[in-house]
Image (cartoon, rainbow, N blue to C red; front, top):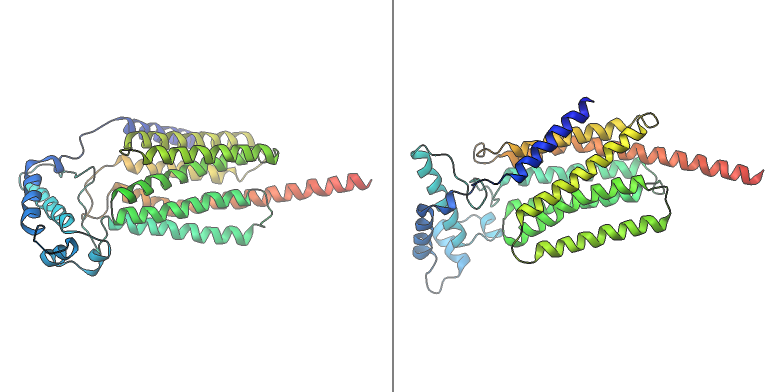
Length: 335
């Protein structure tokens, strides 16, 4: 019962934080920041006959990485004024402010949040490694093999967009990050449902698959229209993830005597829920690079193999059972 209690507590804490609204972006609302930004853009970004990108190079001496990721003169003004505001707060002994819902990060090699970018790439590489292991150890005609690929490809795509978004936060990359991050959560729920109904007819599984795809397309359309609803998106992600977690816990409870490897998926969800609770630790970035969100990305790297090890053994077990059923059927038919 220890695993169940830890997961339940963590889920409740995360849900509580998601519901609480806080005043998190004090920096961008200060008059100091607005005056600094306005004066900077007026003095440096309005020269006649100079293109926006050339202005940024002229006044800020941008590196090749900054130019590659299209940091404009106005962006440079926002970045420099952000730090001016941070230092002004620190001199007065005030708490470090956030800007537009984010902590101030030190930009490295053109990356807006370098630690989150690196950890997103690490997650991508882990999924690549485990995908190769899955294909090496599980036959392609095994039950659950194709469904596992749905989850893996959703994760690979999601982590690519996570790296892109944390490199350069613009409306398009933000939308793609939110949309494809949810695809990971939803595909996990889909895998759980498909595992529950894997013995049902192809028609039933097809209808359920169509329902998931239709729902996801509609959700993308909803997020794409108008201003992104952050609160609603967070609640939907938590609800979907909690539903998948509860579903897997029920499955573990039902098969605990027949499938001892259920402990792998149970351990994964306990550790995953605990890792997700890192999001509760909202603190200014360490060395202006690593924050709680980056640590959450890092924490998922070592625990993902547990999920794949469970999938691999489950696929192998289902194949053995299917083979045994087919053999018995053939023998009975021949008799």
